[in-house]
Amino acid sequence: MERTNFLSKIWFMFLALFVVVVCGGLTFFLTGCGESKAPASNNSRIFTDDADRQVALPSDVELVVPSGAVSQQVLLTLCPEKLGSLADPLSDQEKKFITDEKIQKLPATGSAFGGKGNMNKESIASLGDADKMVLVDVGDKRNSTKEELDKLQADLGLSCIFINAKIDSYKDVYTKLGEALQCEERGKELADYCEKVYKETKDAVDKVQSKKKLAYITGFEGVNAIAKGSYQSNAIDLVAENVIDIDNPTTKGAGDPIDLEQLANWNPEIILFQSSGIYSDVDKKAEWQALNAIKEGLYYEVPDAPYCWICQPPSVNQMMGIQWMSHLFYPEQFNDTIADCTKNYLKTLYKHDASDAEIAELLKNAQ
Image (tube, rainbow, N blue to C red; front, top):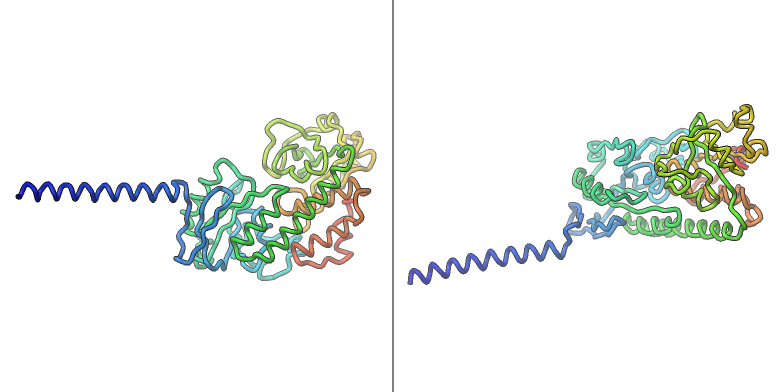
């Protein structure tokens, strides 16, 4: 009898252990070994981001934090009232168009990724209740994106989501973020605007016989350029033939180093210069005057308000860049003007009613 009871106990213990192991393994399988749910309340929502991560979002999102400069632009246009901080403080130029003093005075908590990688995690923790806060990373999906976001989420103890952004996907960017951050109406407005701008631009460019050959020169000495096929060149590559064709181009906004002999060999029809670069000096420099585009006066300075219209960073500012370049290069394809596009862009994205004088100042070297 005692032996029977002993064997019964052993069998019961084995059965209990088997149930725990099987149920635990099944739970792990069903929820997914790569799932990235953040700590959240019972009222949280599950959101699948563009890194294929299932993230528990607060039932009520009160604060949002940008992971860097690309995200900052998107959030400034989508939900500035929910911003808890900025990645970078606004410049005097940016403040001319982003006039809300509350936004201007937000603390700068740095960038999580990229060359800076200077995010102040302690400052983010002090912004408010983590259960009502979301960090947003917008940009180009990297092989390491999922792991980086998982680690950042664990370090911060708040929900972190990634949204992939391409020149042709800003409709999706705003739609997804409108849902995630509970600002669907504003998200739809911006999604519709970006879809319309992209379609009208692409349709117009598709009608031209050949794209203009273009070079975009960056830096204060004019020795760098944005290369074809790079993430920084998305707007250029849509509208023009980027002649800066090199192997393994950088993803950085400063571009790749070149020299004037290379540029002369590429022979661009049009040259664009970064704002505050060497635009105003090239007509005085003999080495630049040797280039056909400079001799023929086909060179322009890229407007930079509130952000550079082409890249640096390549964010929703590209929507203005593709309108500007396509209207400048192929005016016969459009019934409106660059000034019309600029006013509509500033009004729609930044709710800024630009005066004629402001538009004239923005475009003084750009047409």
